[in-house]
Image (cartoon, rainbow over all chains, first blue to last red; front, side, top):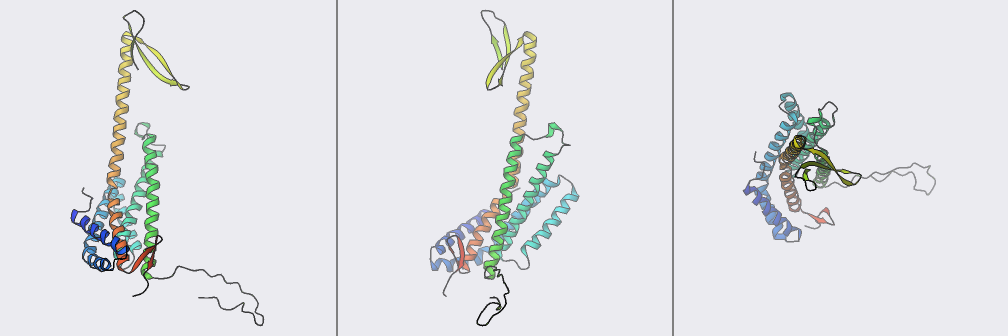
Length: 191
Length: 103
């Protein structure tokens, strides 16, 4: 299965990357050009990358389900639910891709979780046990997948905050004290 | 592990080497038929270990290849996100995205 972005999409990404760099360095023309390039390229990049994401997820589902149609169906349904919940209504282009990333990483974590639990099961005959070096590799991979999952989730939250342009959540603690003359204590807290 | 000839005699002995308390200890298994059987047994075990190692290496590579699409997805989403934020008037300041001031 070919799970690489097509060459033309990679080229579009390279253009976006180059224009972003220029815009980041203060080039106003590049920023305008970036807006235009984004309008033209974003739909295809999203479509292709999401397609790869979904096909990759399907391959992982087949690995974890091991030809059990019920597990396959359950995972597909769970993934659909998760995708809808994470993306929310009318997701922006970055949200769509971040959602695919989060769902794929969640699935990878599930696959690795399953691999480890099978290997650590007492019922597994010794001849089917994997060597320690293999398990260590899976443990490291699990750690990395967890880190990437958390980082993608944080990224999505950050994007939403920036998009909404809302200030950071602020918690004001109010302590009610008795009011005395000329004292401002007990006033309404800042909102 | 291997065959060894001792002294002036032509007789060959099959030996096995193993680690005991941090040093190599050579064990004389025997000569003739006994040595031949031990050599065949060791050869069989060595091949089995090699085959197992190759199997797990392949298994590891298969899993890694199955998850490689995540890198493509990560790259696309990072490029798109950065471009989208810059195009929407944000800039990066000390690692943080901030809205550009002014018109």
